[in-house]
Length: 178
Image (cartoon, rainbow, N blue to C red):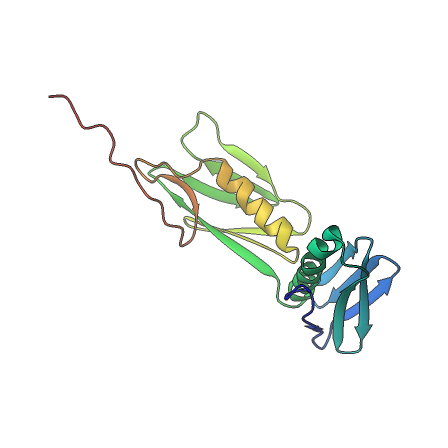
């Protein structure tokens, strides 16, 4: 039995969880999320507790048991407190500015990069820090990864876009002529 899958999920006050067939809907103060539960996994809801069970011991269902429980727990956490990722821009002349739902980033290319804010995501800029916030953990992580991909950190100088707290191992470079 999956160690993660068998743990119950506590439903906080202000969050409503409804199960309609294979679709589970979580609504809370920050918004509403839905997820389709895979075949072979069942979800049972009591007023303050949610449990995830599997119908058999097939390999596929064992693999999806813990995953489904974690996805539902992330949905509950997302509608109550939300998720955020912070990116920092390192480099001379590298800057970002926000206007409306558009993020404009100058990263040393011949043109600025224009990035449209996806639905359900809020992006804010404070000097050299870009903060990505939302209720869907997967979408927040994917948006932050897409922004980081515009200019990954350079292994020789360390310039680029990195996550706050990320350690970049820099290389020494060429040894020089004799």
